[in-house]
Image (cartoon, rainbow, N blue to C red; front, side, top):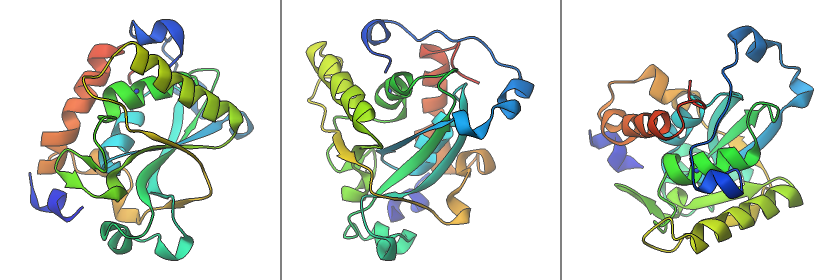
Length: 213
């Protein structure tokens, strides 16, 4: 975590082989969605700044919050998580409209755009278990989708190395400090964002242009 301050993804089946398709949605439709229809995904894949920034640009996503998952409430602070001993992973909570984007499609973007699922306890320049690749599932259906997604990607050999993503039940999600929220949007010229995270947005738009905002 300290180093980044000092230095400058699955609908099952066909989505494994081709970019996902989705229709554009007017801003009025986005804001008019009843909250009761939204679902939640919690994903960890390295620094939460970039993961948050990617999913903030996906159609059908209503809210993305950076935070911590995997540890206790008392350990859910930036300094403690940065030590690598808290049990937490930097994660994002995604609230989405399943009528616009499915949980499987979010996993497509998670695996293919938001991070590298073959890196164990690290992501790019950031090292430690707090940067692990993990899917925190809210129910058996999410767990089944995540496991099937990993299995299909592995069989298809979509990555040169084995996928190391953990699939674990979500116990609790703790929002991170305010200054971490919407970090990419608020700091587009931050060296870490420019070097590590802006390319993810370019990849999202190139692979899934109809899903990207």
